[in-house]
Length: 533
Ligand code: GLN
Image (cartoon, rainbow, N blue to C red):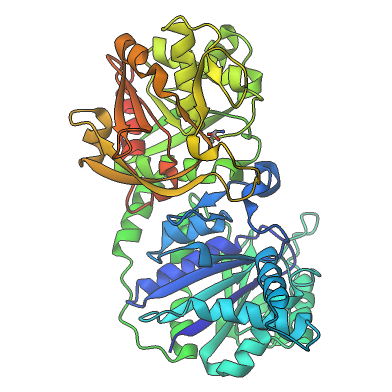
């Protein structure tokens, strides 16, 4: 029978619950245990797919095509858990299912209520992850204790512990210990209140993980322990990482967090093996060199919008012991070639990430033009490929009005066009081409050399594609279609002849990069950036 860990958060949002959950997953795996992990999001949207990146950050996509919270990206980067659409649950999905059952007549004669119907549906989804062979299921409850929206989830996990037995369930609460700048004092009261709130609901945390800017001395930890009713060795400090988020698992390991979990849940585990992880931390701490690349995007003001892209660049750096600095450039700040020259001065590569809508498109086109002409290494991701095609069509093929049908519906030269399968789609949510699709690579191409195989799969999230009517002219003028869907119909990867590294993909390879397994295309891009004079 699988054991369960529930991770809640208090005092404030964005404390790094996702990272902490992923780190605990990694620690348990490092002791030979098999884990599954999921995130509960209390908002009513069915998934974050229809939210603006400014609201929510990046939308992470799983192999099976679920549009999910970006915390799932942390889970995949840190652990080997196989994530699916079951790993991302929202209030919208829970209510949707209960309402569907009510209409179907499954509750005939009953009044349908939050308790027990909504809470039962939440518990069903928790149990669904306890598949055969799984030792521990980690469930992260989004939001902050005290929010109206997260109440049904907290009530459900309280019931769950009662039903499954307290020894099979562990509650971990992540909280913030602020420090007052004026006096330098460390304040435990917000944590006391937050744990108090949890206990009102009937949940006594077993472990408190305290986010803090400074070290917590024993006295502070004793106070937290006493007032929050948590043993002293279960008050764990999680100080701001010094050089990388990948330090977190090691920080927790130093305080024997894994041992506490294993003991509480009565698990049989191996000794800890964090060799691979410590090796990459050493590189991150002391890289041999630095390289700076530019990312031109629509949502650069918010770091979370391109989270997986930034992470994948960091991973690629690890592969060549290099620290990758990213110059983030808002695409709508680039209006002339001069703007581009100034903005990109000195960088060794250019990334154009995914995106939607026409704001800043012309700026991206100018930036690609610069990279193409100056032989600056270029990596295009999804919209990045589409923009590269528009630029090439306009400036090399002489199709001055070339555009994507997304931005100019009636252009005479739609080099990027709506996919056939999208023609009749009316709903916005969950209807794009989503999830993993195979791609055949052309031998001898840069992509092939990077992947070192003929067929790969990558995750997708788009409605538009390269218009095959333009393949011939593109090829004649120097584009090579180096990745195609197995039936040859969809363009997946393009490259530019005679350029040191000009590779763009219709997929989102950033979702599959891990610090321990840097993605081949990102690795190739950073290598090219290091060679760029
Ligand atoms: N907006 C483009 C499309 O829908 C690109 C999507 C993306 O970059 N994820 O095809």
